[in-house]
Length: 337
Image (cartoon, rainbow, N blue to C red):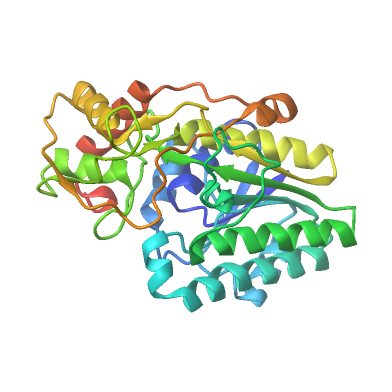
């Protein structure tokens, strides 16, 4: 039984490859390597002890997709591929709509051609917009506030319309909160190109001397210490959520959203302090102006994933920091180390 993973060489994709293979599935990866590295797949193969079929193609290449479905018996698809930086999406929105929406349309068309109707979609908590009600629950109103978030929201709408037109589809929409951490081996982890957009890789790059200090954007939020609170989830817990979602999709039809988070908030300074405890390295920081649109607090209600998928986050902030530090210390320059 083979699972096609689009964007499988990326941060979440590579960890999901490992957990799927360890759970008895075969995986096939398509990735254009624009925001990822083939080295991550070589390290996945070293972890699991087997080759991973890899196609270096863009998901917008329908002929490449058809070749994959012709050469492999694909039973389900996990769709990670896409551009993902909120700030960048505001600068080049057309590129985000082209990449994220068109790739999904082409993927769905080819899946239908080959009668493969089981899809796990990499969505995001950004589809909730600026809701002030916490925790976030799947049936809340949706409304993204940036081009990246809107691509996720539009794709969710696309998938809901698809299921309404053909109830033979099985579509799991996984709304991630804030993935951090790394594989326990320390050989794969988050490897951003350029200056990191996310908090944890920024902290860890300060710890190994690649960046001079951490910028904390705002310290006057209505939170425990004035800094923004988010729901951080270990990337391996997130990967295990995909394994559970694939199992659900193979046995059910429907179009269902699921929050994947811990249900607990952690502030920027609390995460910094936890990383210092895990690493023994002091993280210098400066307070910078707030970023427009950043809410005070965001965290999940993940009870639906527990009830329906049988999934629940297992790893705490301390473990997320320990595993991140192991990865960054062993690979100070990421996969180029």
